[in-house]
Length: 358
Ligand SMILES: *[C@@H]1O[C@H](CO)[C@@H](O)[C@H](O)[C@H]1NC(C)=O
Ligand SMILES: *[C@@H]1O[C@H](CO)[C@@H](O)[C@H](O)[C@H]1NC(C)=O
Ligand SMILES: CC(=O)N[C@H]1CO[C@H](CO)[C@@H](O)[C@@H]1O
Image 1 (tube, rainbow, N blue to C red):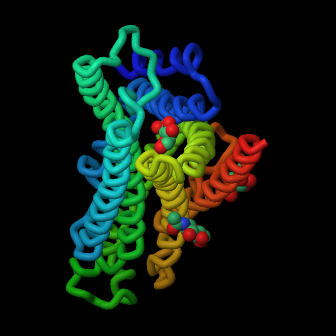
Image 2: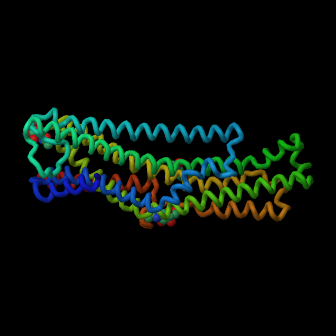
Image 3: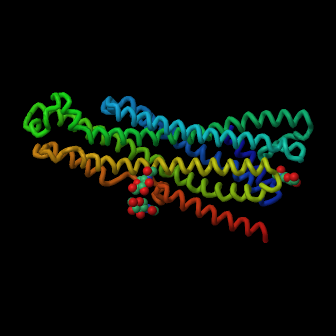
């Protein structure tokens, strides 16, 4: 359905478009659909990776949220996920509402909300209503497909950030939590106790396993995401410039169309922001794991056991090289690149506006 829609929209651009504004308008619609299709295909192609990621939080035996502070961490991330999900859905649906309304509110007769080539004549009252409803259902479905894709992407990234933060908390509190089983005897005494050292080592081993497991998942995800994110970056750049252009040129003439453009612009800005923000968060969290290992109370003399030392060193060494998500290996997905992208798009927008004036 999406492909048919994109095809019909491109047909319109090639065959019927009359001005630059119309061409830009149609590019705005099919660019976002194309990149979503590409991302969806990529996700379907790497289904096994995403399946593993989806199960990683609940099915990992070492994902330990037994303490109050760690279940609070989990709740924090659940809440974050929910609020960003609501934000994206809100902006998306407001955009759609304006999108569907503007052809009904302006003074043109029988115009549709997308620039599309129809192989039949629809400019009579009955046919127009029918065509409008069919396109409305199709377009609404496709738009929700786009939003669902973005939300799924965010959920995958948030899970990883949450797992990493929980792991950091586990590492920081390892000694304290092992102490509990020994009625809170002072640590200076406990390090002489072989039973305690065994308990501690077992726990540390679990943590090392969980760390390796999470890092492997992140590595696989970042490999599968690299190409789609490069596409997303380019599309977002073009879309932000073009929609910004549309918003500035139409706002004074057709208010609903102007509002629609502004909302659509916000959606695109928010979508890419969410991706960059959570990718950076994961990068930061992978680093934080190393710091947590440093603050894990090793200084009481636990490191005189060689395997404690090597396990801690392993964690720190792995955390020393933070995972950075990239778009095609060329751009780091961080908030800094996001700012750069928005700035570039803004420059392109001013060029477009100057071009229009002359
Ligand atoms: C990641 O860490 C850097 C440097 O400490 C900080 O400036 C940035 O705000 C952090 N990013 C997020 C998303 O927390
Ligand atoms: C991406 O981040 C790494 C590590 O911080 C840095 O070495 C590299 O230059 C960055 N790449 C770009 C394109 O900014
Ligand atoms: C794209 C579109 O609907 N443009 C209309 C905006 O409003 C002016 C005047 O109200 C119309 O002439 C345009 O066709």
